[in-house]
Image 1 (cartoon, rainbow, N blue to C red):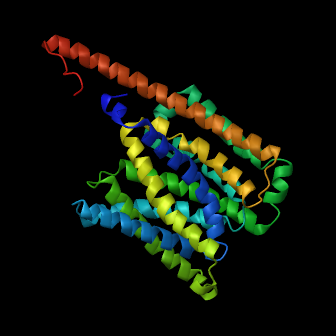
Image 2 (cartoon, one colour; image 1 turned 120 degrees about the horizontal axis):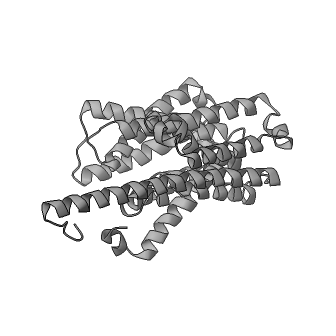
Length: 332
């Protein structure tokens, strides 16, 4: 860990981790409450438009410029894949599936990264620990729908369709993230996210009208609970927690920040049980534990590889420095 990362208040760092762990974990319940009286696509469209507009204004006030048209297009594609086809579909699915189960399925995203990140396949599939973690993680998913657990999940046509939509959602999120990762775009993270959210909101408004959501929705009929849930999603989920996440990435190792993937489903399942009365049985609990175990195995394997590569690079650099008769200045 570099010297810069030790200068931050421990309390502030802990608060940022709490925001990412708890707030993002609680968004599944917030979505469930929001869609009780607000159609899912309208809800997500409004959420992302307001949050994106706030972040865009913030970026412009900081003196940042809107990127060129080609960059805006690429950023928008990433936003549509991750937010419109990834995140927003969660809201649609929660009409038919428990929020806790949805959160557990979303937790498989890191495993999809391994399967879909073709550029890293040589490393991923030559590392037996990552393969073991992948198998363990998906074994946990299979357990969720095995035996008695399948009775309720497959009890209706819409639930089966929702499971398929969740697979599409997780794959879209992963695809969009990888697209964003490998596209070279000259723009700040803040500007990228603002554009992604606004682009996603446009697509979601189109989807809302296409599905006829306007025909059975009126602001006057939206409950106070749903309105407060949307406000929470905008302010806490899309702005506060996201900014905490990006700040943590700048001062802590990505593998450590990425542990939110282990905690979010636990928070979601607990809140779903506590507030919404969702059932939590032994099968769901064990399945969640197995999925998290698979993620831990994968993450630790990646971290060891990163540390090993960093150590090798540093050793090579020191050797080159000695051969050239100089040393790197400490702290630079």
